[in-house]
Length: 129
Image (cartoon, rainbow, N blue to C red; front, side, top):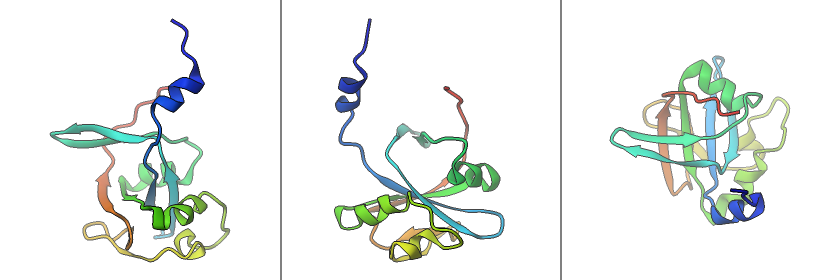
């Protein structure tokens, strides 16, 4: 069967936009928007996130095995998406003026205006390329 990629993409819209916050081993903050995310299981609670190996978020997650998923609202959507831009030597959250505080368990940044925050531990990587 031949699948029209444009129609397939429309079938899964709108997707939520989340801002994933991570830290490297020197406590440098990284934030990046993602929309290829979804639930996998409720018992145990698992989510999936698709990302490229070249992204800093990917590298930080493999390094520290931790990350925070911030579900955005319309009020902070544009600022969250703007975190996709490069900000040399600057905390992206500060650069786009998003208010944040340390998360409860990992102390990684969480957005104050997020509608839901998930503190996550890396479980498994699947290479589907």
